[in-house]
Image 1 (cartoon, rainbow, N blue to C red):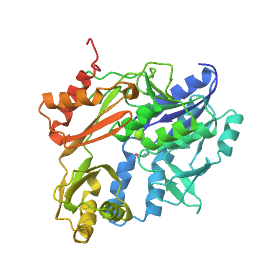
Image 2 (image 1 turned 45 degrees about the vertical axis):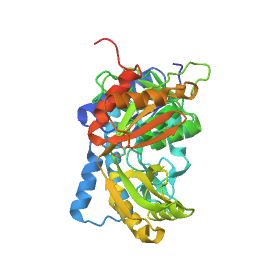
Image 3 (image 1 turned 60 degrees about the vertical axis):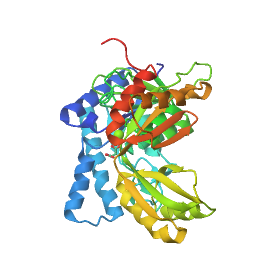
Image 4 (image 1 turned 135 degrees about the horizontal axis):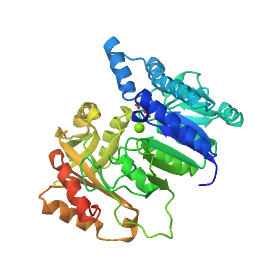
Length: 409
Ligand code: ASP
Ligand code: MG
Protein backbone atom coordinates (compact mmCIF):
# COMPACT_ATOMS: atom_id res chain seq x y z
CA UNK A 1 0.00 0.00 0.00
CA UNK A 2 1.21 3.46 -0.78
CA UNK A 3 1.57 5.91 2.05
CA UNK A 4 -1.66 7.54 3.05
CA UNK A 5 -4.18 8.25 5.75
CA UNK A 6 -5.61 5.29 7.66
CA UNK A 7 -8.46 5.36 10.14
CA UNK A 8 -8.05 2.48 12.60
CA UNK A 9 -11.04 1.58 14.74
CA UNK A 10 -10.59 -0.75 17.71
CA UNK A 11 -13.62 -2.53 19.17
CA UNK A 12 -14.27 -3.41 22.80
CA UNK A 13 -12.27 -6.66 22.91
CA UNK A 14 -9.36 -4.99 21.10
CA UNK A 15 -8.99 -2.52 24.01
CA UNK A 16 -10.32 -4.95 26.64
CA UNK A 17 -7.46 -4.61 29.15
CA UNK A 18 -4.12 -2.89 29.70
CA UNK A 19 -2.24 -5.48 27.68
CA UNK A 20 -4.61 -5.17 24.71
CA UNK A 21 -4.31 -1.38 24.86
CA UNK A 22 -0.52 -1.67 24.73
CA UNK A 23 -0.82 -4.03 21.74
CA UNK A 24 -3.02 -1.47 19.98
CA UNK A 25 -0.47 1.26 20.64
CA UNK A 26 2.31 -0.95 19.26
CA UNK A 27 0.32 -1.50 16.10
CA UNK A 28 -0.44 2.19 15.65
CA UNK A 29 3.27 2.94 16.14
CA UNK A 30 4.12 0.28 13.53
CA UNK A 31 1.66 1.80 11.07
CA UNK A 32 3.23 5.21 11.62
CA UNK A 33 6.71 3.81 11.01
CA UNK A 34 5.45 2.58 7.63
CA UNK A 35 4.87 6.25 6.87
CA UNK A 36 1.10 6.45 7.20
CA UNK A 37 -0.91 9.08 9.01
CA UNK A 38 -3.25 7.41 11.47
CA UNK A 39 -6.50 8.45 13.11
CA UNK A 40 -7.60 6.07 15.87
CA UNK A 41 -11.20 5.50 16.94
CA UNK A 42 -11.91 3.47 20.06
CA UNK A 43 -14.85 1.65 21.62
CA UNK A 44 -15.39 1.28 25.35
CA UNK A 45 -13.27 -1.43 26.98
CA UNK A 46 -14.78 -4.93 26.82
CA UNK A 47 -18.40 -4.96 27.99
CA UNK A 48 -18.12 -1.62 29.77
CA UNK A 49 -21.12 -0.09 27.96
CA UNK A 50 -23.31 -2.98 29.17
CA UNK A 51 -22.00 -2.47 32.71
CA UNK A 52 -22.89 1.22 32.61
CA UNK A 53 -26.37 0.33 31.40
CA UNK A 54 -26.76 -2.13 34.26
CA UNK A 55 -25.60 0.46 36.72
CA UNK A 56 -28.15 2.94 35.37
CA UNK A 57 -30.86 0.33 35.81
CA UNK A 58 -29.81 -0.28 39.38
CA UNK A 59 -30.00 3.39 40.22
CA UNK A 60 -33.38 4.00 38.68
CA UNK A 61 -35.84 2.44 36.25
CA UNK A 62 -36.23 5.81 34.54
CA UNK A 63 -33.29 6.74 32.44
CA UNK A 64 -33.54 10.26 30.98
CA UNK A 65 -32.03 9.85 27.49
CA UNK A 66 -29.83 12.92 27.84
CA UNK A 67 -28.27 11.59 31.02
CA UNK A 68 -28.00 8.06 29.65
CA UNK A 69 -25.98 9.39 26.72
CA UNK A 70 -23.74 11.39 29.04
CA UNK A 71 -23.15 8.24 31.07
CA UNK A 72 -22.45 5.90 28.14
CA UNK A 73 -19.98 8.22 26.41
CA UNK A 74 -17.75 7.87 29.48
CA UNK A 75 -16.76 4.35 28.35
CA UNK A 76 -15.14 5.51 25.12
CA UNK A 77 -13.46 8.42 26.90
CA UNK A 78 -11.67 6.06 29.24
CA UNK A 79 -10.36 4.06 26.28
CA UNK A 80 -9.15 7.09 24.35
CA UNK A 81 -7.13 8.49 27.24
CA UNK A 82 -5.53 5.12 28.01
CA UNK A 83 -4.63 4.55 24.34
CA UNK A 84 -2.94 7.97 24.25
CA UNK A 85 -0.93 7.09 27.35
CA UNK A 86 0.20 3.84 25.73
CA UNK A 87 1.11 5.71 22.55
CA UNK A 88 3.18 8.19 24.53
CA UNK A 89 5.09 5.27 26.05
CA UNK A 90 5.75 4.14 22.46
CA UNK A 91 7.18 7.53 21.57
CA UNK A 92 4.16 8.40 19.40
CA UNK A 93 2.72 11.86 19.87
CA UNK A 94 -1.03 11.72 20.23
CA UNK A 95 -4.04 13.58 21.57
CA UNK A 96 -7.48 12.35 22.57
CA UNK A 97 -10.73 13.92 21.39
CA UNK A 98 -14.33 13.35 22.41
CA UNK A 99 -16.88 13.09 19.61
CA UNK A 100 -17.82 16.67 20.30
CA UNK A 101 -14.21 17.87 20.08
CA UNK A 102 -13.81 15.89 16.88
CA UNK A 103 -16.65 17.93 15.34
CA UNK A 104 -19.24 15.17 15.03
CA UNK A 105 -22.51 17.08 14.91
CA UNK A 106 -25.69 15.04 15.34
CA UNK A 107 -29.42 15.51 15.57
CA UNK A 108 -31.04 15.60 19.02
CA UNK A 109 -32.34 12.02 18.98
CA UNK A 110 -30.62 10.80 22.15
CA UNK A 111 -29.38 7.17 22.31
CA UNK A 112 -29.61 6.79 18.52
CA UNK A 113 -28.52 10.10 17.09
CA UNK A 114 -27.73 10.53 13.42
CA UNK A 115 -24.73 12.46 12.16
CA UNK A 116 -25.76 15.69 10.45
CA UNK A 117 -22.37 17.22 9.79
CA UNK A 118 -18.67 16.52 10.25
CA UNK A 119 -16.35 19.38 11.21
CA UNK A 120 -13.13 17.57 12.11
CA UNK A 121 -10.96 20.73 12.18
CA UNK A 122 -9.15 19.75 15.36
CA UNK A 123 -8.42 16.30 13.95
CA UNK A 124 -6.89 17.88 10.85
CA UNK A 125 -4.83 20.22 13.03
CA UNK A 126 -3.56 17.32 15.13
CA UNK A 127 -2.57 15.42 11.98
CA UNK A 128 -0.81 18.48 10.59
CA UNK A 129 1.10 18.76 13.88
CA UNK A 130 2.32 15.19 13.41
CA UNK A 131 0.09 13.72 16.10
CA UNK A 132 -2.13 10.67 16.12
CA UNK A 133 -5.64 11.86 17.02
CA UNK A 134 -7.47 9.28 19.15
CA UNK A 135 -11.22 9.78 18.97
CA UNK A 136 -13.87 8.40 21.34
CA UNK A 137 -16.28 6.40 19.20
CA UNK A 138 -20.07 6.20 19.37
CA UNK A 139 -20.67 9.83 20.30
CA UNK A 140 -21.22 13.33 19.06
CA UNK A 141 -22.72 16.64 20.06
CA UNK A 142 -26.22 17.63 19.04
CA UNK A 143 -27.41 20.79 17.36
CA UNK A 144 -28.76 21.64 20.87
CA UNK A 145 -25.18 21.29 22.22
CA UNK A 146 -25.94 18.13 24.22
CA UNK A 147 -23.79 15.01 24.18
CA UNK A 148 -25.38 12.23 22.12
CA UNK A 149 -24.66 8.59 21.27
CA UNK A 150 -25.04 7.00 17.85
CA UNK A 151 -26.71 3.73 18.89
CA UNK A 152 -25.17 0.44 19.99
CA UNK A 153 -22.15 -0.48 17.91
CA UNK A 154 -21.89 3.17 16.86
CA UNK A 155 -18.10 3.41 17.00
CA UNK A 156 -18.10 1.84 13.54
CA UNK A 157 -20.09 4.84 12.31
CA UNK A 158 -17.67 7.25 13.98
CA UNK A 159 -14.75 5.60 12.20
CA UNK A 160 -16.41 5.59 8.79
CA UNK A 161 -17.65 9.17 9.15
CA UNK A 162 -14.15 10.39 10.03
CA UNK A 163 -12.63 8.38 7.18
CA UNK A 164 -15.11 9.98 4.78
CA UNK A 165 -14.64 13.52 6.10
CA UNK A 166 -10.84 13.25 6.09
CA UNK A 167 -10.78 11.46 2.74
CA UNK A 168 -8.84 8.55 4.24
CA UNK A 169 -7.53 5.79 2.00
CA UNK A 170 -9.04 3.05 4.13
CA UNK A 171 -11.04 2.55 7.29
CA UNK A 172 -9.70 -0.45 9.19
CA UNK A 173 -12.10 -2.08 11.65
CA UNK A 174 -10.15 -4.15 14.18
CA UNK A 175 -12.08 -6.81 16.03
CA UNK A 176 -11.69 -10.23 17.67
CA UNK A 177 -12.33 -12.25 14.50
CA UNK A 178 -10.09 -12.40 11.44
CA UNK A 179 -12.68 -10.96 9.06
CA UNK A 180 -16.11 -11.56 7.60
CA UNK A 181 -16.99 -15.24 7.27
CA UNK A 182 -19.24 -17.21 4.94
CA UNK A 183 -21.26 -18.08 8.09
CA UNK A 184 -20.86 -17.70 11.83
CA UNK A 185 -17.91 -20.04 12.56
CA UNK A 186 -19.50 -20.98 15.89
CA UNK A 187 -22.44 -22.41 13.96
CA UNK A 188 -20.59 -23.66 10.89
CA UNK A 189 -17.10 -24.97 11.71
CA UNK A 190 -16.36 -25.14 7.96
CA UNK A 191 -17.09 -21.44 7.39
CA UNK A 192 -14.37 -19.60 5.49
CA UNK A 193 -13.06 -16.09 5.67
CA UNK A 194 -14.11 -14.02 2.67
CA UNK A 195 -11.29 -12.02 1.09
CA UNK A 196 -13.68 -9.51 -0.43
CA UNK A 197 -17.35 -8.62 -0.01
CA UNK A 198 -19.32 -5.95 -1.84
CA UNK A 199 -21.06 -3.17 0.09
CA UNK A 200 -24.43 -4.51 -1.02
CA UNK A 201 -23.65 -7.99 0.22
CA UNK A 202 -22.26 -6.67 3.50
CA UNK A 203 -25.41 -4.62 4.08
CA UNK A 204 -27.61 -7.64 3.53
CA UNK A 205 -25.39 -9.65 5.86
CA UNK A 206 -25.39 -6.97 8.57
CA UNK A 207 -29.18 -6.67 8.30
CA UNK A 208 -29.83 -10.40 8.58
CA UNK A 209 -27.62 -11.42 11.48
CA UNK A 210 -24.00 -10.85 10.42
CA UNK A 211 -22.55 -9.52 13.67
CA UNK A 212 -19.27 -8.00 12.56
CA UNK A 213 -20.28 -4.50 11.43
CA UNK A 214 -23.05 -2.11 12.35
CA UNK A 215 -25.43 -1.78 9.39
CA UNK A 216 -25.42 2.02 9.41
CA UNK A 217 -21.65 2.12 9.12
CA UNK A 218 -21.75 0.02 5.95
CA UNK A 219 -24.43 2.27 4.42
CA UNK A 220 -22.34 5.31 5.28
CA UNK A 221 -19.19 3.75 3.83
CA UNK A 222 -20.92 2.91 0.57
CA UNK A 223 -22.49 6.34 0.26
CA UNK A 224 -19.10 8.01 0.70
CA UNK A 225 -17.01 5.39 -1.09
CA UNK A 226 -14.88 4.52 1.94
CA UNK A 227 -13.17 1.12 1.55
CA UNK A 228 -13.48 -0.94 4.74
CA UNK A 229 -11.03 -3.56 5.91
CA UNK A 230 -12.27 -5.79 8.74
CA UNK A 231 -9.40 -7.53 10.50
CA UNK A 232 -8.18 -9.02 13.75
CA UNK A 233 -6.33 -7.11 16.46
CA UNK A 234 -5.15 -10.44 17.85
CA UNK A 235 -3.35 -11.77 14.76
CA UNK A 236 -3.02 -8.50 12.76
CA UNK A 237 -3.28 -10.53 9.53
CA UNK A 238 -5.14 -9.13 6.50
CA UNK A 239 -8.89 -9.73 6.82
CA UNK A 240 -11.90 -8.94 4.63
CA UNK A 241 -12.16 -5.97 2.28
CA UNK A 242 -15.57 -4.42 1.81
CA UNK A 243 -15.57 -2.48 -1.41
CA UNK A 244 -17.74 -1.45 -4.33
CA UNK A 245 -18.71 -4.42 -6.48
CA UNK A 246 -16.38 -4.88 -9.43
CA UNK A 247 -18.64 -5.35 -12.47
CA UNK A 248 -15.88 -7.03 -14.47
CA UNK A 249 -15.49 -9.78 -11.92
CA UNK A 250 -17.43 -13.00 -11.76
CA UNK A 251 -19.51 -13.01 -8.59
CA UNK A 252 -20.04 -15.95 -6.28
CA UNK A 253 -23.67 -16.99 -6.58
CA UNK A 254 -23.93 -17.25 -2.80
CA UNK A 255 -21.24 -15.67 -0.61
CA UNK A 256 -22.63 -16.20 2.85
CA UNK A 257 -25.36 -17.74 4.97
CA UNK A 258 -26.50 -15.76 7.99
CA UNK A 259 -28.77 -16.55 10.91
CA UNK A 260 -30.74 -14.42 13.29
CA UNK A 261 -32.89 -15.46 16.23
CA UNK A 262 -33.45 -11.98 17.61
CA UNK A 263 -36.88 -11.57 16.03
CA UNK A 264 -40.38 -12.77 16.81
CA UNK A 265 -43.40 -13.28 14.61
CA UNK A 266 -46.73 -11.54 15.09
CA UNK A 267 -49.82 -12.73 13.20
CA UNK A 268 -53.08 -10.87 13.00
CA UNK A 269 -55.74 -13.27 11.80
CA UNK A 270 -59.10 -13.03 10.09
CA UNK A 271 -58.41 -9.61 8.65
CA UNK A 272 -60.97 -8.41 6.08
CA UNK A 273 -59.31 -8.37 2.65
CA UNK A 274 -60.07 -4.79 1.68
CA UNK A 275 -58.20 -1.54 1.05
CA UNK A 276 -57.10 0.46 4.08
CA UNK A 277 -56.68 -2.39 6.55
CA UNK A 278 -52.93 -2.78 6.16
CA UNK A 279 -52.53 0.99 6.17
CA UNK A 280 -54.40 1.28 9.48
CA UNK A 281 -52.53 -1.60 11.09
CA UNK A 282 -49.04 -0.61 10.02
CA UNK A 283 -49.83 3.06 10.64
CA UNK A 284 -50.50 2.16 14.27
CA UNK A 285 -47.22 0.23 14.52
CA UNK A 286 -45.32 3.14 12.98
CA UNK A 287 -46.95 5.64 15.36
CA UNK A 288 -45.67 3.58 18.25
CA UNK A 289 -42.17 3.60 16.79
CA UNK A 290 -42.05 -0.17 16.19
CA UNK A 291 -39.68 -1.28 13.45
CA UNK A 292 -40.88 -4.16 11.30
CA UNK A 293 -38.81 -6.46 9.26
CA UNK A 294 -40.49 -9.11 7.10
CA UNK A 295 -44.19 -8.82 6.24
CA UNK A 296 -46.33 -11.51 4.66
CA UNK A 297 -49.99 -11.36 3.74
CA UNK A 298 -51.51 -14.74 3.01
CA UNK A 299 -53.95 -15.22 0.16
CA UNK A 300 -57.47 -14.46 1.22
CA UNK A 301 -60.23 -16.95 1.72
CA UNK A 302 -63.88 -15.90 2.06
CA UNK A 303 -62.74 -12.29 2.02
CA UNK A 304 -60.49 -12.81 5.06
CA UNK A 305 -56.73 -13.00 5.26
CA UNK A 306 -53.85 -13.31 7.75
CA UNK A 307 -51.03 -10.82 8.01
CA UNK A 308 -47.76 -11.85 9.68
CA UNK A 309 -44.72 -9.74 10.34
CA UNK A 310 -41.52 -9.97 12.32
CA UNK A 311 -40.21 -7.54 14.94
CA UNK A 312 -37.32 -7.56 17.39
CA UNK A 313 -38.11 -9.88 20.31
CA UNK A 314 -37.85 -6.82 22.57
CA UNK A 315 -40.71 -5.16 20.68
CA UNK A 316 -43.06 -8.11 20.55
CA UNK A 317 -45.30 -7.02 23.44
CA UNK A 318 -45.54 -3.50 22.09
CA UNK A 319 -46.39 -4.89 18.64
CA UNK A 320 -49.10 -7.15 20.09
CA UNK A 321 -50.60 -4.18 21.97
CA UNK A 322 -50.62 -2.11 18.78
CA UNK A 323 -52.41 -4.89 16.89
CA UNK A 324 -54.91 -5.39 19.70
CA UNK A 325 -55.60 -1.65 19.71
CA UNK A 326 -56.79 -1.70 16.09
CA UNK A 327 -58.13 -5.27 16.03
CA UNK A 328 -61.83 -4.57 16.43
CA UNK A 329 -61.65 -1.43 14.30
CA UNK A 330 -60.23 -3.33 11.31
CA UNK A 331 -62.42 -6.33 12.11
CA UNK A 332 -59.66 -8.87 12.70
CA UNK A 333 -60.35 -11.95 14.80
CA UNK A 334 -57.13 -12.66 16.68
CA UNK A 335 -53.55 -11.66 17.34
CA UNK A 336 -50.91 -14.32 18.02
CA UNK A 337 -47.18 -14.11 18.63
CA UNK A 338 -44.35 -16.60 18.35
CA UNK A 339 -40.90 -15.87 19.75
CA UNK A 340 -39.53 -19.29 18.82
CA UNK A 341 -38.61 -18.40 15.28
CA UNK A 342 -35.38 -17.67 13.51
CA UNK A 343 -34.32 -16.52 10.12
CA UNK A 344 -31.82 -18.10 7.78
CA UNK A 345 -30.58 -16.06 4.84
CA UNK A 346 -28.42 -16.67 1.82
CA UNK A 347 -26.65 -13.63 0.36
CA UNK A 348 -24.79 -13.33 -2.92
CA UNK A 349 -24.24 -10.65 -5.55
CA UNK A 350 -24.16 -13.35 -8.24
CA UNK A 351 -27.78 -14.28 -7.53
CA UNK A 352 -28.90 -11.57 -9.91
CA UNK A 353 -27.61 -13.52 -12.89
CA UNK A 354 -28.10 -17.07 -11.63
CA UNK A 355 -31.57 -18.55 -11.47
CA UNK A 356 -32.18 -21.56 -9.28
CA UNK A 357 -30.92 -20.22 -5.97
CA UNK A 358 -34.42 -20.12 -4.48
CA UNK A 359 -35.15 -23.66 -5.62
CA UNK A 360 -31.92 -25.00 -4.13
CA UNK A 361 -32.59 -23.19 -0.87
CA UNK A 362 -36.10 -24.65 -0.55
CA UNK A 363 -34.96 -28.14 -1.59
CA UNK A 364 -32.18 -28.06 0.98
CA UNK A 365 -34.51 -27.05 3.81
CA UNK A 366 -37.06 -29.64 2.76
CA UNK A 367 -34.39 -32.37 2.62
CA UNK A 368 -33.78 -31.91 6.35
CA UNK A 369 -37.49 -31.60 7.08
CA UNK A 370 -37.49 -27.91 7.97
CA UNK A 371 -40.76 -26.09 7.42
CA UNK A 372 -40.61 -22.59 5.92
CA UNK A 373 -42.96 -20.16 7.67
CA UNK A 374 -42.19 -16.93 5.82
CA UNK A 375 -40.08 -15.91 2.84
CA UNK A 376 -38.65 -12.59 1.79
CA UNK A 377 -36.20 -11.69 -0.93
CA UNK A 378 -34.16 -8.88 -2.42
CA UNK A 379 -32.19 -9.05 -5.65
CA UNK A 380 -29.19 -10.50 -3.78
CA UNK A 381 -30.80 -12.20 -0.75
CA UNK A 382 -33.33 -14.88 0.17
CA UNK A 383 -34.52 -15.18 3.77
CA UNK A 384 -36.70 -17.90 5.28
CA UNK A 385 -38.27 -17.86 8.72
CA UNK A 386 -38.09 -21.30 10.34
CA UNK A 387 -38.50 -22.70 13.86
CA UNK A 388 -35.78 -21.32 16.14
CA UNK A 389 -34.50 -24.75 17.13
CA UNK A 390 -33.90 -25.69 13.47
CA UNK A 391 -31.89 -22.57 12.58
CA UNK A 392 -28.38 -23.89 13.16
CA UNK A 393 -28.80 -27.12 11.21
CA UNK A 394 -30.47 -25.14 8.40
CA UNK A 395 -27.47 -22.82 8.19
CA UNK A 396 -25.07 -25.77 8.07
CA UNK A 397 -27.11 -27.53 5.37
CA UNK A 398 -27.34 -24.39 3.22
CA UNK A 399 -23.66 -23.59 3.66
CA UNK A 400 -22.77 -26.98 2.31
CA UNK A 401 -25.45 -27.06 -0.41
CA UNK A 402 -24.16 -23.80 -1.85
CA UNK A 403 -20.59 -25.11 -1.93
CA UNK A 404 -19.24 -22.81 0.79
CA UNK A 405 -17.71 -25.45 3.08
CA UNK A 406 -14.00 -25.06 3.52
CA UNK A 407 -12.06 -28.01 2.16
CA UNK A 408 -9.23 -29.48 4.21
CA UNK A 409 -8.68 -29.30 7.95
N1 ASP B 1 -19.48 0.97 23.21
C1 ASP B 1 -20.63 1.06 22.36
C2 ASP B 1 -21.42 -0.24 22.40
O1 ASP B 1 -21.05 -1.14 23.11
C3 ASP B 1 -20.29 1.46 20.97
C4 ASP B 1 -19.38 0.51 20.23
O2 ASP B 1 -18.71 -0.32 20.83
O3 ASP B 1 -19.32 0.62 19.00
O4 ASP B 1 -22.42 -0.34 21.74
MG1 MG C 1 -18.94 -3.46 17.33
